[in-house]
Image 1 (spheres, one colour):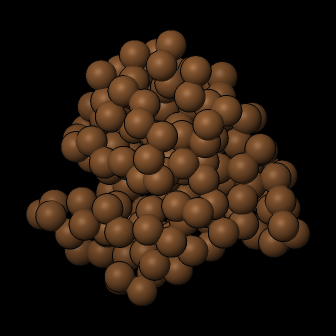
Image 2 (cartoon, helix red, strand yellow; image 1 turned 90 degrees about the vertical axis):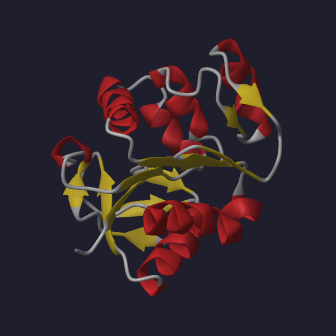
Length: 172
C-alpha cells in the first residue's frame, strides 16, 4: 500500500526549499504527498514559490496518513498556538506515526507537548520555546528521536527527508 505524507505549509512565507526539496525526495522514494494549509488558495513562499494546497489542515485524517511534516519559514508562526495543529501532532505521536518539522516549525511540536524529553533541533530563534517545553535541544542540523524528526532550517532541507523516508520504510 502506498504510504502518504502530508506537508503542512503556511498561507504565506513558508520556506520554499524546506517544502520542495523534501517533497521531491518523498515522491522519488515512491510516497504519495499531500499539501495542506489553512486554505486551498495559492500559498506564497518566502522566495516567491506558488503552491496550491490539496486540502485544508482541518481535513487531515491521521488514521489515513503515515507521516505529518510541518514546513518552516516565518509564516509557520500561524500554527504556533493553533490547537488543531497541536492535536494533529499529538495524534501522530499517539498512533506511533512519523511526525516531522523543520526550521522554526518544531515550535509547533513543542507547544503541542510532544517534544518533552525528546532530542530535537530548531531554527535558533525557537530554541528557548523548545527548552521551556522540556525538549533536549541540540542545535544540530537534523535530529531523529524515535519517529520524531526535526531540522533546523533551510540548510537542513536536503537531508531532512532521509530520516523520514527511512522511518517510513521501516514501518510495515
